[in-house]
Amino acid sequence: MKRIRIALLLFCCMFFVFPSIAFAFPNNIKTSTIRPDKQQTIWNNTDLHITTEQPEKHPIPDWFAVSENGWVAISSFGEPSSISIYNPNYEFQSIIYIDSNTDVQVDWKEDNLILIFGISTVMAEITLQGELVDMNYLLTDDDNTRRYYYEYLGNHTKISNGITYRLQNSSKILDRMLFVDKNQLVRVNLDGTETIIYDATVEQKSFFYVKVVIAIVLIGVCAMIFIPKLVQLCRN
Image: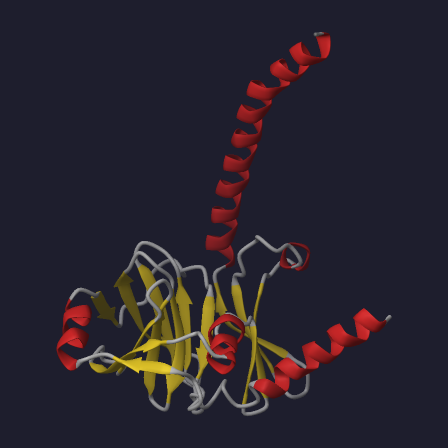
């Protein structure tokens, strides 16, 4: 019972640690300045492309961020990674493709977009037109920055101006499974009703079936290799 109480207390504290980060970029995170010439070198090596043409298939969402003004950015890891931008009416505006070998998490700083590249923890502030504004290293050696990077950015539920936004799976059963991708971004209104902002159900199901087939093949291969050896070992 004591452990349950402690867990509940820690869970509640998470909401008070970041009460406004969903709509206000935090000023207490720790960063390290990157020289302007090095910023430009890093940025020149970042293959970034922006288009206002909405893709036929929705990239499977991994992370998201909501600005103070209600703009939504949905980041998807892939080849290339992509960031879908929606206005406060949840209308598609643009998609940013980034040819990166790492995940790209997102946040907002007023009207600008924050891109955080996972392995290097390079944090780039850009305009929605793709122009570089500033670039720093995000240092995760203090508690505030560590919580921001590891807990807040990847949180599937965020609150902006009293409105809850949640990444979920359209299947309630699959939504409970840890390694199944989310496929919807939902807005939970004040009266409890839900509005689907982004839906990649079709794309997620296709990818899920591929993973199931791969898992079955791997299990089959392992069975073919180890079961005969196990039988032989039992006979001996």
